[in-house]
Image 1 (cartoon, rainbow, N blue to C red):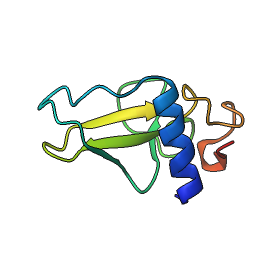
Image 2: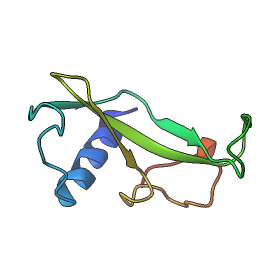
Image 3: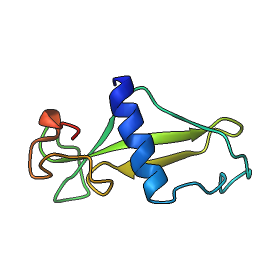
Length: 92
């Protein structure tokens, strides 16, 4: 993840007022993970499908207790085309 991508993510979170303290310990310091997290989307709950659709997101972690919050890139307006394969994900 480039510094430019991190800056865009931080800006998008700020614009959406995502500034509350940690819901577990009330700490106000967080860091952004160095990569993206893509959760697999499946039509059934049983078994595990390799490949296919996914939900690209970023994770913000509390520096005190480690609580992780996930933020979907599409909801933040950072995906060029939500219908693309997550491996083709591109930030604006």
